[in-house]
Each structure stands twice: as structure tokens, then as C-alpha cells.
Length: 297
Image (cartoon, rainbow, N blue to C red; front, side, top):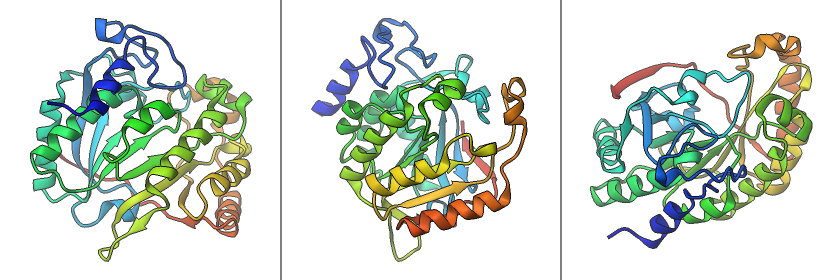
């Protein structure tokens, strides 16, 4: 018997209203949504990832599960091969639950669900099943920030750490680069709900995050993302929480079609933003060098 939250989440699949697009696809009948996925999970890989923030990684790495499909269309996407999701094999929630347990046995620090928004009902079911099998490590919801509050409410009690991007402070820029003109507004509402559920990031005696919100913001060239506005919003909506001002931008995917995206952010601007975030009361968390140790796929 599955909890009521899973049953309610399934209903959001048809017509689809799992994210702010409300694309209305009949996903439970096999129709694919804007995300490119119907009602089945598509998993690209699962393994111990050592490239996340140090508070998420630890000695065993973050148990990262990369999910196919995405509800955004970022023209500079660094994971575009996965975000298309169309060629990946389908996986039932029960199988994913077993993978979560396998990762826990490998002593990962957490279960890190990457790009979960468009498949949240199936992931919620997998978490429920995994907990019945003995899952104890924290669950990380590693999303693009473009979330439905209605779905987030159903995740309460099942997600320990929210790891959202907050990509843009400008609606016009969000429309141009991610086809999401309402992104700043919806990301703010989503962050408020995440913060209500789990509060600021909390780190245990081991130095690993056990609960809370950690926001990521990727700095774009020429301050295209309106980064200071993003920091102001995060500080107002989630006071005292952690933020990673990221300087890992590089031109990928369709960035070549936008001359301004072929530039690189200046290091001085990154340092200024990090200092500004601290002045606003946010905790600056830095990332680590990317490295992925596969366990299963």
C-alpha cells in the first residue's frame, strides 16, 4: 500500500502539471510532456560522484542518479545528452529503489537525484519503497529550480536536502536561454516552499550535510543571469542558507548560436558575488573537481 502522497503525485501526471509549464500532456497514457518523458523513469547512470560540494560528497561520494529528460531548455546545457532522455532505457520505481539500497551499501553519503522535477511522482514512489528496504542516508533533490509548489508539498518528509539551481534574476533572459519566462517568479516560490520544509543547510559532526537547502547559481558571461538580483532573492526567501556561486560555466550545446555565451565570466566578478552573498548573510559553499566513480547503471 502506497501513501496518499504518492497517489496524489501520480494524478499530477495527467494532464501534466508537475512543473510550472503545465504542458497538459496525458503522460499516464504514454504521451510525452515538454520534458520528453511519459510516465516511466529513464535513468542514465547511478554511482558515487565526487564532484559535488564537499558537504555532499564525503569519503564515499554522493550517490548520484542521473535522470533522463528535463523541463528546461537551457541552450548552454552541459548535460544535454542526458537531458534529452529519449534513448535511455525505462526503469520502474521498484528497480530504482534497489539501486538506492545498493548505493547505500557502497557507503555513499546520500542519494542524489539529478534533474528530478519531471519524474517526481515516480521518484517519490521509489523513495518510499527504498525506505521500506532500509534506506537511511539523506535524499537530495538536485533540481533546476523550476518547480511546482503543489508537487513539492507532496515531497515533504521524503526529501532531506533540496539542491536547487537559481538560474536567473531576469524573466527576459530566462525566456531567451531556457524557454521559461516565468522562471524567476516560479523559482522564488519553489525556494520558499523548500526552505519552509527543511530550513537552512545543516551539517553534522562528520562535516556532511544532513538536511536543509543549498542553492546553486551558475554565473554567466557579462552578468547575463543578473546574479546580484538572484543573491538578493535567495537571501530574502531563504535567509542564512547556503549558496554555491559557481564559476564552472563553459560554452556547450547550442551556445555557439549566441555570441555572448561564447565568452567566460570574469574571476573578479565571481569573487565580488561571493563576497556579496556573504554580506547578505548567506553561507558560501564551494564545489570540488568533477570525478565520477560508477557503481551501476
